[in-house]
Amino acid sequence: QPPADAALAEALIALSFDRDEGLKRAAAFALGSLADDETEQRLTVLLEDADWLTRVDAAVSLARRHLAVRYRDFHLRHVLVEEVLYAC
Image 1 (cartoon, rainbow, N blue to C red):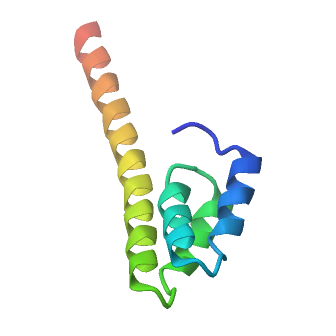
Image 2: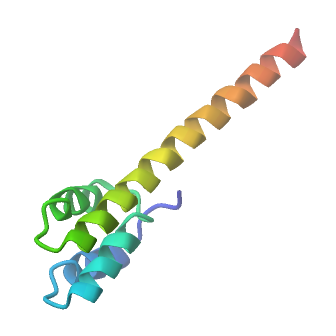
Image 3: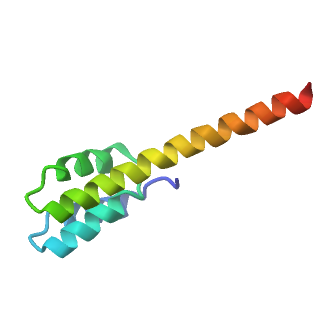
């Protein structure tokens, strides 16, 4: 994942506090594309939001982030195994 842009993260976190549920949901979904501790902490808080769709978007965002990390780690292990096998 690309590194989180601080200004974008700040703007999305601010939107995640908005009274407009649609904006809050969109922010929760978009925060999942930014890989930093601050956005992950905000998504974790949004898992307890009063609006159930915001909770769903936060959960989906966290799942996407964790799946991306797992895929990256799996892919790196696969590449390393292939390199070792090729070298032998």
